[in-house]
Amino acid sequence: MAQHDSVHYQLQDGIAVITLDDGKRNALPPSVLKGIYAAFRQAEKDKAVVILTGREGVFSAGYDLKVMKSGGVDTLRMLRAGYSLTARIMEYPFPVIVACNGHAFAMGVFMMLSADYIIGSRGDFQVAANEVALGLTMPRVACTTMKQRLTPAAYQRTIVLSESFTPEAAVSAGFFDELVEPSQLLDRARALAATVGKLDMRAHADTKRRIRASQISAIRRQVPLDLMDAVKFGLRGGKPKR
Image 1: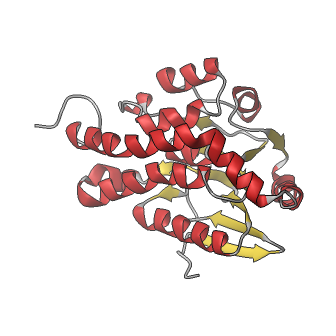
Image 2 (image 1 turned 60 degrees about the horizontal axis):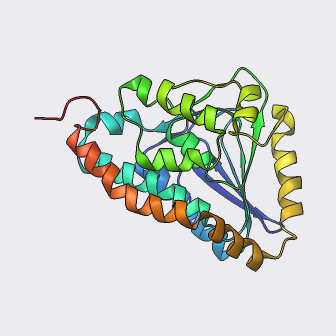
């Protein structure tokens, strides 16, 4: 597959590692999101278990703020691609493991929480869906994505109060399934991928779609509504744009 400069695809022993690395904060502009979609298409063609990971110290900071502030078609394209990516990952027919290298914010969190299993890294990192702190009403898609993973109390604090979680707190909240040392992250993800790769994949895919059918359907209904909100509120939140 043709690789985006910030999205790298490596296949070995039935395991596809999709690595995001822009050398900075792993923002998600339209071009990077397009690269992620292409990587998942290739992985599905390869019938591969996916490990989605970032760079040292950061998984993803979410949407590209420069694109967000610019408004217009590129902003809407970015929002549509990101919101829809959650459903794409949720229904991917083979196991998806996220190896979270560090900080995860906003759309980076929603993308992460769409996976089947999430391994976090110990360290001075933060996990947060900080839309409200930035003056944005939390998108419907984000609420749906987080509700399927987080504990009820953590869900409320995450969305309404923009609470930031340390890696240890993120485990009890439901963001992570387990924590490892940064040096062990990819080894642990590969070992888990090899184990779940032995599952009956037809049963895995059918079961995943069965238990997530309502969330996936809701997300597809919510994407255009969230895009309408983005236009209505000037892509920033607050009072409607005049």
